[in-house]
Amino acid sequence: LYPIQETDGDWPRFLRIHPLLPWSYAQVWSYLRADAGRIYCQLYDLGYTSLGNRKSTRINPELISPATGKAAPAYSLHDETLERRGRI
Image (cartoon, rainbow, N blue to C red; front, top):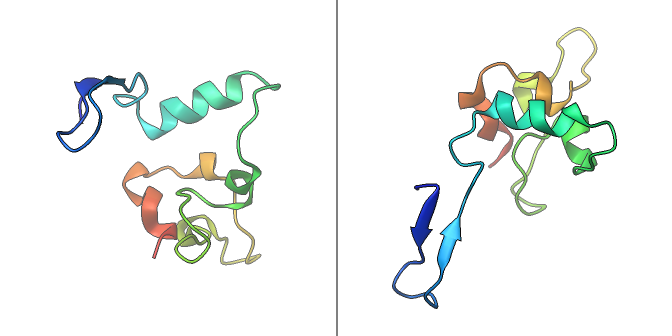
């Protein structure tokens, strides 16, 4: 995907703009957390890193502490290539 592109041929014609597409996982979380009043889905605080439907979304196993069994928040994930480990 590119930050700015037209829709695919089977969609109505319009220009799609994805301003955050070039951002890294860490940059998105830095932005979200910079303002204490900024609202985002609370599932991310419970260890979910990639949200889909109820059947395909799980807590990311990379965020579960072996010592406590509890998950750290999504912004704690250090390897962004593992973001979708919580999806089946």
